[in-house]
Length: 393
Image (cartoon, rainbow, N blue to C red; front, side):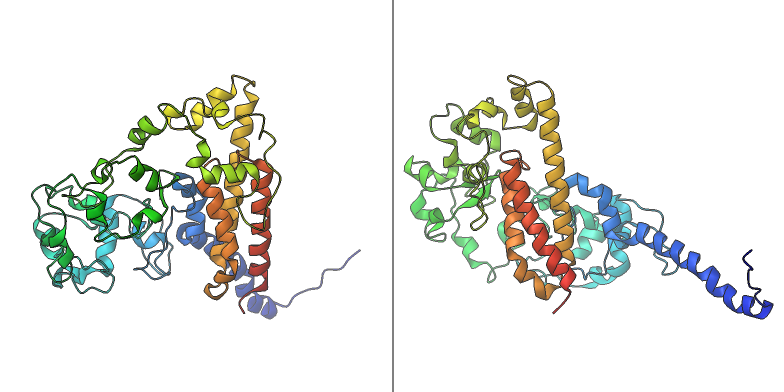
């Protein structure tokens, strides 16, 4: 029979605080994690917008976390419990740290005001009834491309009339002298654009998830004003995606890869130099139009699933969902590991970002070539995992 050693009362009393502290610390740590750590928040909110749901703001330091904006209680001892994304809640939390914003002059010289916008906070907040999130709605969650965390001009037009408001109202003379040289008419030719945007036709830009190229449109003698505004809101793209499709997909006469080069490279297993792989098993069997039969609908996932049923049973749609879920999960994990790398080692992981960017730009979440995409993500995962385990150097 095992004898349990007796503990003297004095020893027990000495050990008691330590015995009680262990579960207390664990409970407090768990409570702190589930109410203050952005990684816990993202376990649900990641599904809203994907990996860009939380964009590291260049304005706020890293210690500004989800509770700083969304929590009611900010006690350093008791973790906050009441969360809300209501603009009023967020606005009150903004003013906890930025109360002096109403005392400052127009924000022309503010160090984060890279566009040198003349903006008086006091009348907007105190006289006009505006709140911070009317303009700064994307200060942490920026759904635009590229992400900047800065207020967008569309927020201005929600109150100001864009037809009658002068550009110089917010862009002072001297800071933006070129504004006085902008075209005064809507119809405009390439030669006029070249005065300020020389060589623009040689740059490939991402628009509506494809690489947009100017030369084919210029060769078709299209006016810049067909797609861009030139008088008001200079440069703004006025063509919706559906309007672009009315020309490009009305009668598909040329190879889809002329616009969808990334998708073609994924299918052929050549999307990332140095990480080539076998082409998708359907290359040579099914063309793009075999799955994207209703291109006028915009290549929607629902459209592709519907087309699958023309040759397969309903398990094909379930397979598509599983592939995309697996790829999304792997991307999320790699992104999490990458964000944990010390800043000094991130440049060494540039190829990881290249892989993630390529898979994201493809848009199919792996379905264009599942084995190749999973192999790309496997290589990226291995690289970032090794770097994470190695620690800072």
